[in-house]
Amino acid sequence: MTLSDNVHRLTRHHLTLSTKKVTTVPPLLDQLAEAVHSNTRTRSGGRNERGLPINSDAIDLWKELDTQVRTAEANRTGTTRGHLTQILQRWKNLTDPHLTQITTNMVTQIENLLDPPPPRRPIRQPCPACDQEWTHDTAGDRKPALTANVYDPEGGVLPPTEWDIHCAECQAQWHPNDPAFKILIQLLTTTQEAVIR
Ligand SMILES: [Zn+2]
Image 1 (tube, rainbow, N blue to C red):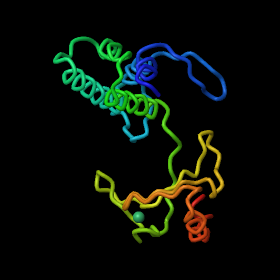
Image 2 (cartoon, protein in one colour):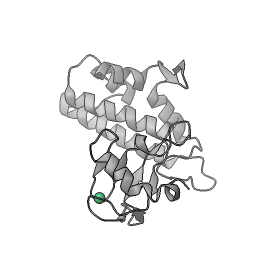
Image 3 (cartoon, helix red, strand yellow):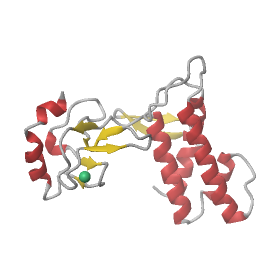
Image 4 (tube, rainbow, N blue to C red):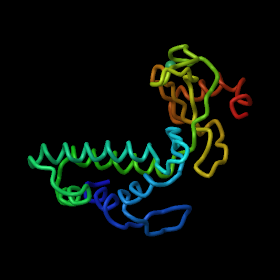
């Protein structure tokens, strides 16, 4: 995606492909602002406090993106005047890899918050690369190190030959087109049924 494409999706009504149908949707920034006051549960598990119709994940993301955009604009022009939309509109005809990167991440982060990807399933086996079965997340909770994208976006189960497998402990990653992937799947096949369940 180009900088101009990203700015368009963030700040203007745009076309999107959802369940094989092209529809026009509001700017991603408007959708994020809307999500702040929705009860949508988001991927990071941020559950709203009882009685407060506020989505804290959406607020946190808005603040983070606002800071990123204003910092980049301050570095570029020395000023951060205007609404986020106005600042981004000023970027749309520029050629700047840094701003392209920022806006690409913005699009991805907002889309993931609004429409979280299917959850990854843990694989309860030691990682073939680092031999660790467990890892700790940022909150210090113990989690299985190996996970796979067992589900497709419609909620169906993918065959193991289409999984990508990731180790959160050593960051090793295996895709179906890796030479080692078949061996890994064979190693894990013994527990495949337990994984799906
Ligand atoms: Zn590992």
